[in-house]
Image (tube, rainbow, N blue to C red):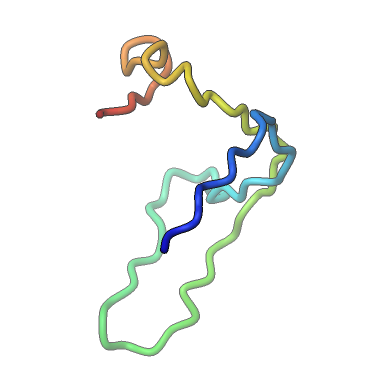
Length: 72
């Protein structure tokens, strides 16, 4: 017998996202090749952000105005 899903209240989450840190000289990132051992570590910059819960409002977020879109 399956149990009923618990509904979680809508909420936002504060977190940090790591972004690739461009060297600033116009050079491309160092390439990595499959099968060659490497750490795959690249310089990053952490930015504090708030992830907003858009549950129930997914249809309002479209590619043209928000840069992403949900498909159903």
